[in-house]
Image (cartoon, rainbow, N blue to C red; front, side):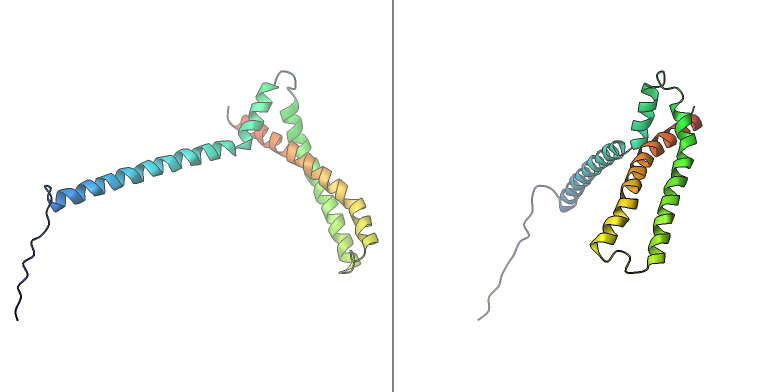
Length: 144
């Protein structure tokens, strides 16, 4: 028994090349749209995370009331950084002297935190405020 199958190709009104080009063009338009959305999002994210702009804005708003603030922050920053570094150095040297068992019991841990915890935390907070102001001031001086 012999059977013969005749299969004719399915065709639309458009040629396969024109249909392919149309779908490729549509896909490229969609990709471009998504890329534009990503770019807008990245720009908004960068603007939201630009703390220097916020600090420069603060300095500009209060320029009349506190004209010496930018220069004072620039002068104070190295002094604060040195004090912070010195405190960290003292803490690390003490831990090195006392050895691995330095903080093994509750009493020694509490004593350690009483001596260094509060001061390190407060100095860190002060540096996190004065540092950006000094940086914004130095950038404002560099950019007329």
